[in-house]
Image (cartoon, rainbow, N blue to C red; front, side):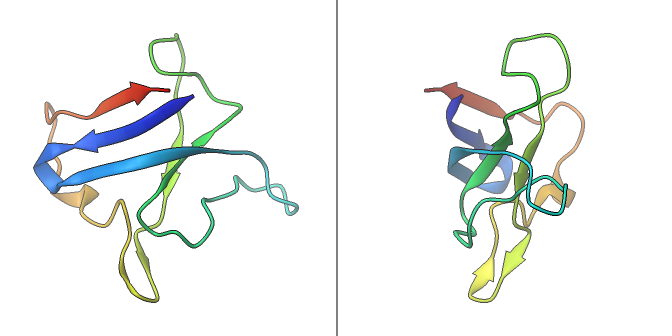
Length: 84
């Protein structure tokens, strides 16, 4: 799917990996690489109709995760996905 996600306002520039369904039926998350995002492979791809689902850590044992500062975003802030 995507190669990277960029959110300039909160200084996110992260790679994206595909994630599926975990053994317990929940959406899987990227492995403990707290600065990577995951694209749920059963959701729409960028540019397609429908909802695209991205997941990522908010924080981790060693510090802030990729989506730590999402709460600082407002309507209209730029989020870009580079397709891979």
